[in-house]
Length: 154
Image 1: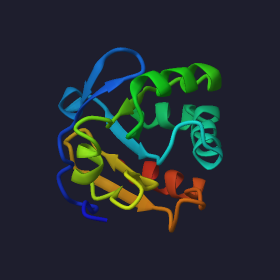
Image 2: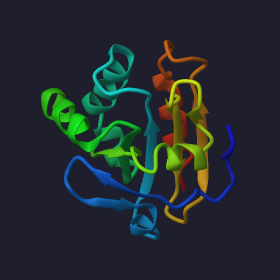
Image 3: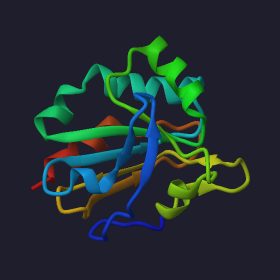
Image 4: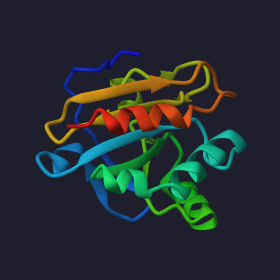
């Protein structure tokens, strides 16, 4: 993983399923951010992971953390999926330039043209306080990793 704990998080500016453009700098000094990169919209493991976040969003709210799901899918596909699944957090499209933000965070997989399962917890100052990734596309991230990461936020 290119971006590690203690490093400044790369700035991003991505379109979301809510029609808004979201930037990391919009949160500076106000909220923590949890970037949850996932490979593909409408796939089983991705759906299970994001539904777990949706079902326990209160733990992120308690940590004053804005959750963003990020994939290289189009906003149109992401929006349909978000509506079907009832996601209460925005999904952000890293579609074009293809995988630019995923590459900046070190989770883009050139072989498949998609992001790997990487999570970055970023504090209000823009510093990565936790970073974790699953071993492969078939393995979901452990929910305990989110709990540990949120507990480390200042």
